[in-house]
Image 1: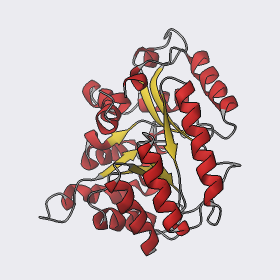
Image 2: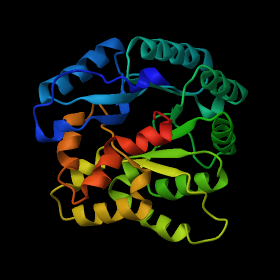
Image 3: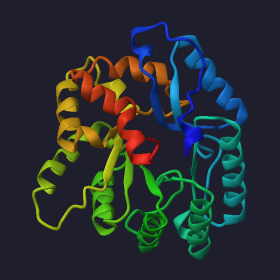
Length: 280
């Protein structure tokens, strides 16, 4: 969609890391329009620009719990309308897997309205990743052309393993696992081996490195974090902030400390997101 390629011209870059535009794929709009203004203000203060940012309405005070699909639908519509008013904003819709047919219908509806990303969160939405309704939902999303974003901060033991199993069962659906496993990022090194097993892994998993990159930079685990990025595949890693909990400037400052090549950093800043979301 051509409007998404229009830069969000917030300020002239003044810092070293501000020289390169980025795509931030993980922004929470806790307060709608006011949150966008706050996000823009943070970027302007840091002299940072973004080409696009993926924004969702739920998180913080806004929860998308089961049992009220009409409210979820209305909030998705409000987000889509907001994206139409802000060049560079990519709407990230949501549903609740336990809403059954209503959730499946909403997946089809938002996809028809041009939405590319669907976020579901096992912990805040209180659902079990292993529930058959979740598999049915993510398969339907993949059929509709949606990329499914799921939290992977590894809040509870087994989170990464459950997500990997889900991706194996839904090979035609592309996933973005946010936070790349948190401090359990080491688990995902096994993808390098999974790719060698014939007919096992569809290579349908991507990651954003929001939050985790701040903990890894300038730390004893930094080299392992970079090693993991390369093992999961640099082409499968996206830059993201998790605003408002963490600012994009702080995220980029940490990211630039990682011992990655200039080419690798360029892909993670924006190139991979452009390719995955079809923004080129």
